Image 1: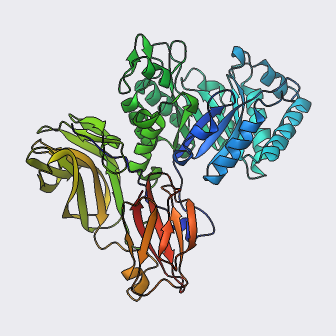
Image 2 (image 1 turned 60 degrees about the horizontal axis):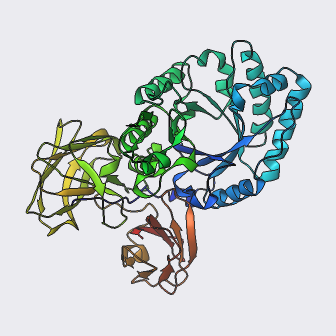
Image 3 (image 1 turned 135 degrees about the horizontal axis):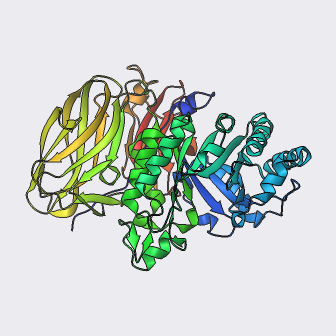
Length: 534
């Protein structure tokens, strides 16, 4: 058998630790709805999300609210999310059995609108929330003005307090005319529900593309355009996890007359969201499968591959990107399968001559030498692989891959190439078959961290081992570690561990499996970084 690994590598954002003013660039949003009635907080993959919408707070027609269902769960979500750097919003409304009359009543009465806005602000403060998501399904010709007025009032109240305001809208253009331009200006982002079309089609890539195109044509900024994807099938709203338990293929889109989104479609939609929008939204997390079949994991693989939806300025000359085979924008001919390499996940296998992978929109910050690393395994004598830019118009040469004695016996083969600064589609082409491909890493040769200078002996000589690590990471430096401090960052640049490193040991036993960045600051405030795998 042949296979591949899921490293969850995103360039750690060391600048977040150095700049008190916060991120210097926009973050690609991954928003998951968490219903009060479904799913355990302990099962939420917080490290793959940026926002959570807790559903639903139900309004009354006079601007008051029904008691929130499962308040203990909401408190637990907020606590766990904030400890992972994830924002939490309360989602107000929902389907309401197809009858949005309570919203109409609130919006058409100034007193009720004021009560509603005041109660929302109090609710946000009570639970320590980061904002509000309005789910009015759906404004029509008679209520468009009322909806816009209500959103204006909420924007005034929430934005003045540093809170977010978002809204969920139908994916089809049939609902678009009733969302006025003032709403698009007042919200922080728009969750486009590109699903629940006529079953079993339900939520095709075509619907997603049309929905995003419509809202962008309305003048909605890409950063505010969030594409919604379903973790369930239609008809009957069958959860993705249930479909798999019934025998559905995680890589297909239909099973026994039920249409759903399998892993390839979810990845394609995530790439679409990167190319034309600013995020992806999920209804809902409790319907996801686990392990290699998790749709959220599939989204995260694309997020990691695409660098978080932004091209942050490099730290000094530093540049490194890990391209997971399963996160390719286009896969022609290779088969994805479970991988036993470090990190698990999937690899591309059953590679034949002429097969290829494409990773869209990779930005190289500067011209010069780059190292290409290929993580490969072969149960035969190996083969030959080549790399190129922009569909072969810029060839990067071929590399001979050895036999490794087994389809899951992994080794890394590297070569050096010269690249010009710019943004390209990066391709991998199988000159011959006979091997499995796990990932490709592209690193700027002699890349260094901004705060590290030639005189920084501790940074130059710092070594870490073992890598991968199980529980204790050992540090060694010729200059010694007296007075040095460390921080461990996850793939989103969030500190997950910190302390003094004078003893030369960093305990990582409690960290989940993944890829991390160790940032060491010596007593002269010079820093150096190392990535490690757990």
